Length: 199
Length: 221
Length: 182
Image (cartoon, rainbow over all chains, first blue to last red; front, side, top):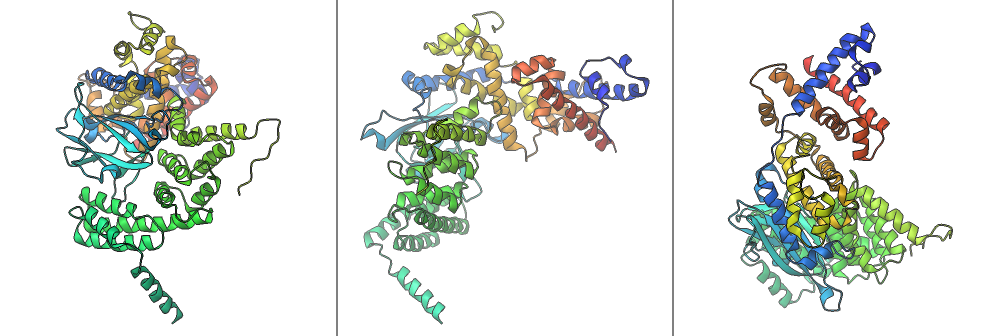
């Protein structure tokens, strides 16, 4: 039996003091206080976030607002927006954190409904090159490079894709296949994940 | 030896598959320089087989090219391509059970993808039955697989999509379902995609059957 | 709620929605560190916490028009970050959630007081083995120093349910440590 006595829990909650406990519970009370104090003491260790965090957030914000009407449209119910699993990168991939995937469904018209403009944004400050490979470009790692934007570390590509379903991944430095954490993903059959874009 | 003769007949049917020379050359061109010769030969064979049965060939070609682009060994690429072929077959059967016009290869490809995303053949059949015009089967299945990839359990995916269709909402509403689920997940306190989907399904059911009207749900055809 | 000096959160939010997006930097600077420790304890690593905080800010920007009470931006932001942490936990619960060595090193103190490294390691493991809900209440109450009433308001739940979680957490911490010491 390892449960603390209910009165000891009240002690830990700060509702009673050690002196309020009956003498037979004092030892258990002291043990409990030591335990919680030690756990809290460890957990109280300060956490320091990178000074670059602010710049990274603002880079993402600016990239979204680059087309002001686009950002506004994202809040409208008709917009298609997929931000599914942001930032699931393993630590080793943290440098290639993907920021955002923006989809803009054009105003409906017989012609426009067949294509959708998609903006891919990748935050990869340490990358030398970034590309997009998927079913829309025959998985050709050379076909769709992302370009550096004005914001440091931010890579972008804007594609007009046919409506339908597309699978894709980012390719960092020609070798590292990184699924887009901002989109849903499925098993690729090779032990990795492909991001899914449904337009 | 009836079985053996049947098998031979089947093989003959496959070898006589109606893949035009132009189509074969197109496949060869797409694969040239992108996949090892053994994989190319396998894809050619499976594509001919698929075409003979009215199945789309593109998912097979794409999977082969993808695997090779990712540097995957040829035998693993072959296994993955065979898996896709099996999914196309299973999807076509499930969609037929739902009353799909057999020539809708886009829907079959979407169905195969949905199987890969976690739906089962029964789910595909149910979604196909629900997708009467103006709802396209291919679109419904793509949305369903996206929801599954987001983490919504398959049964709930079917429930949500069929409720929205039953409510008679515009086709665009179906397309927007993943975004709506995501919006709820972003706002809810620890809300899971499953919970978000359940909430949307309840809301759609309420719109389909407003309180006090006791209107029965439209039966599945 | 207003931040430390500068314009009130509500005024900043309204300015951003009117198109002055650069002012979002004020909110980021104001609140970037406030819940960093919470996120780190919830996720078990500072790297994951940084990703979560960053992502929560980007999400909050995307959804800013839906912030119903701009004067309480930080309360709304906390819920987005919290949701992000829980989603991450669900995703990674089958994997070791630790950067144990780094965190223990960070917790080592030169005065060598109170706890041995071994016991600290056990404590850390015990905390990380709580459910996310239990750990959250523990962190908010015993690390961030909030009262049950304050936590209930922030998480939009009831005090009795928080107490239930907390009390289970006490028992579980004790059980885990005893198991380690046996």
